[in-house]
Structures are given as C-alpha cells and as structure tokens.
Amino acid sequence: MPHTVDVVIEQRGSSLEQLTNATGLSAERIESIVNGRWTPSPDERIKIADALGVSADEISWGHTMSPRNVRYHQFGLPDSLSDSKN
Picture 1: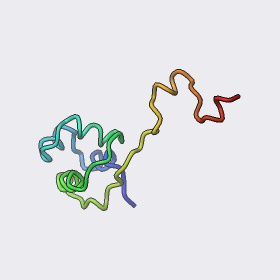
Picture 2: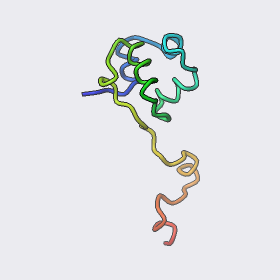
Picture 3: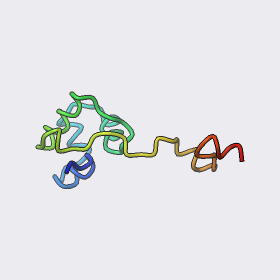
Picture 4: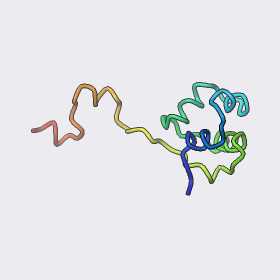
C-alpha cells in the first residue's frame, strides 16, 4: 500500500533539504508537496521517488489537506451553502 511522501521521507531517514538538493526542485515546492498542498507533476514524482530510492508507485500523491481554506474554519464560515441558509 502506498504511503504519503512525508511518511516515505521519515522511513528513509531523509530530510526536506536532502530532497531539495537531490531533486533540483525548489524548497517551497518540496514543502508544498510534503505537506499535501501541491500534487506534483509526473516528472516531479519521478525525481522525488528516485531521490528517495523508491518507485513513484510506492508513494501516494495528491492533496492531503482539507480543500477548504484554513481561514474558513477559523472564522466558522459554513461548510456548505445549505448551512448558510439556516
């Protein structure tokens, strides 16, 4: 079963800095991918997987954060339009 990239990094004893250096991607991009805010392109997936010594299929890629902006949750805005009509 694939693991998220942050879990694979931890399992491999790697760091964001090492991953940045090994892939040539920006630190901001790596951080966004690791934190689940950015889904990497196929080329980025291969670079990251190669740097971690695994195949791209062994990593679960995609957003892991709530798609709603964190600010909405802080201010208690409704989760759906039907909530706002009540």
